[in-house]
Length: 536
Image (cartoon, rainbow, N blue to C red):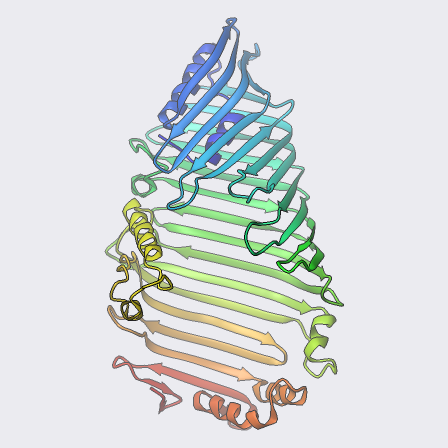
């Protein structure tokens, strides 16, 4: 059974051998080897030194070859040793390397190499084959990723991530299914990216360099995974695994973050370009869950400040956000019944630097109060197929390939056929078909305007538009128009036209001319009414 590249690498370096307290190291290795062969890897060993209580394996190589990806993972030395207190210690010596080659249709293969370095790494395993606990401690874990020369146009694109004081544990319980739980913490994480783009061939001779660094002060993560029995090729057939009971969830909490970046180079005309940027954040968190019932993501961030300086501008581009949060849930498995989905996003306290405001409002006529945005939308959708069904992915890839083969700008192309789309490939049927959408709230407060929109819509099968009602209330629109004319962003002669356009869809509230409201009705026959007047 082949897993993803990331999970395989982590398992090799962190989980260097599910073990039994009363097993010999040789038996532990047999268990580990069978685990990876079950994942679809071919495992070879350069040499073996079995001293009874200690087993040393040299030049351990795990390879996986599929139609799309070839992967080779190499461990120079892996040592498994009994500790004498009902535990087994597993240690990796040297650099773990990963070489991956991905086939891309009509392009050169995409190659990248990964090197993981974990000095003084240690894993202590205990328990039984049915219930194993693995406790690990890594003073540092460095991961270096390099793209192949083909992908970097001959330049260098190294990415480095370093975790410090990484400790934690994971537990595997084997029953009808395999249940894995984990939690780990790191004192900090440092990220570094360097891009060096040499002069390109052809007419354009632009080149440049980019360097960025980021530090996260404290990371905590935990979660669980359930692997159902009897499912082969789980990584390639996640749809079958989900229907058999696969589930995964996890949380990631991050402390304060800081980062900076610089760039410099020349454009195609030889002109110099340079700049720098920096940011800070009070931290954030991410959660993820996936099962047959659906997939969900949720994240928050606090106290973000960003500043970018470009040599072509006399002032920095800067903004700040008090907090931001987002959440998304959607169905992924086929069902004859409609399933729920939702989208939530909230941005609180967005402020822009005065330098940006002064570009179009030097007299400070527009309110510069912090802006807020909230989106809360939910509904139900019919899943006519499994989202992760490989057949759907193959249809999408085939459609993209056919579209690229029919370039409408090519010499001799049939412009008539291209225009009416007669020769374009048919799009595959999307498995996600919305049945209803409820706008619980879409609100915006910015530049003196306060907008609030709600609605309830249904989407009949085969219909070109939804059926239902959308209502809105708006305050400050007329005052904003007056100020836009005053500062010159809207010409005076266009003010009347703008107001007439607004009047088609909104009407003033009696007794409060600066407050407006609208009611849009979408009828089954395709007609649309705004405040009782037909507009379509």
